[in-house]
Length: 317
Image 1 (tube, rainbow, N blue to C red):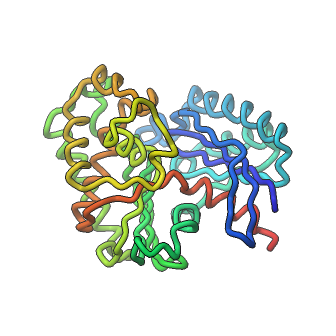
Image 2: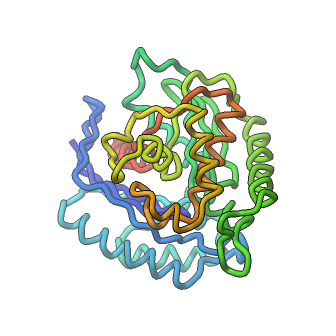
C-alpha cells in the first residue's frame, strides 16, 4: 500500500485526491477528495497569460491542499497541470508559486499524457465487466481542452483538442465581459462549428466510431448526469457509473443553452462555478455522442485525478 496525494490543476478547477493505492489488488481507497473552482484559465484564450487574480485563487487553494496533504501524511505528491498552464506565456510564475506552497514542481503535461492518465483513472475498475464492451472511448471534457482516448487494456490512440467548456464560453458567449444570457442561436452555432472541427481533428488519429462504450469524465459530464437524475444535490455515489442516453443529453443541453443565469443557478446539483460554462460543456458532450453514434454515456467520477494517483504510486514499481 502506498499513500499518495494527486493534484489536478485544470482550466476551471483544481482538485485533490489523497488515497491509499494497492497495486496488487487494483484498489484505490479515497481518504480525501475535493474540488475548488479557481478559473485558472480566465482570459487565457484571449490574452495568452494567466491573470493575477486567477493565480491568487489557485495559490489559495494550493495552501489549503498543502494542509490536508500534511494531515494525512502522504508519502508521495504528484501535481499535474493541464490546458491553461500549457498555453500561458507566464507559466513560470505559476510553477514557482506551486513549488513554494507544496514543495513539488507541477508537471505541465502534454495532451497525450493527459489522455493516458484519464484513461487509466476511468477504466481501471471497468476492465473485465461483462456489461460493458470494449474498446472504450474515454472522453474528458475539461475547461480548455477535451481528450479522446480509445483503448481496452491499454491506450490504443489518443488526441487532445482545444475545445472545452470555459474556452468555448469565453470565445463565443462573452460580450463586454458578460456571458450572453441566454445566448443567441448564431453563438450556439459558432460553438458547434468549433466542436465539429475539433472532432474532425481528433478523428485523424483516434478511431472514435470504433468504440463500443463511451465513458465520459469531468465536471460537464457529471453535472449532466446529476441533472438527468434530478438530484436534490450533487451526489458522487449516484453519479459514478450512471448512464445517460443521447436523447436525455440533448434535452438537457437544449434546456441549459436556452435558460438564463438565474434559471441555471437554481438547479440544485449545479456547482456555482459551472453556471456560466455548463451549456457549452453539455453541447460538447452532445456533439461527441452524435458524431460517434453512442446511444448512452457511462459517467465516471474517476478520471485523470485517479490516474495521477495510480501513476504516483507506481512510479517506482
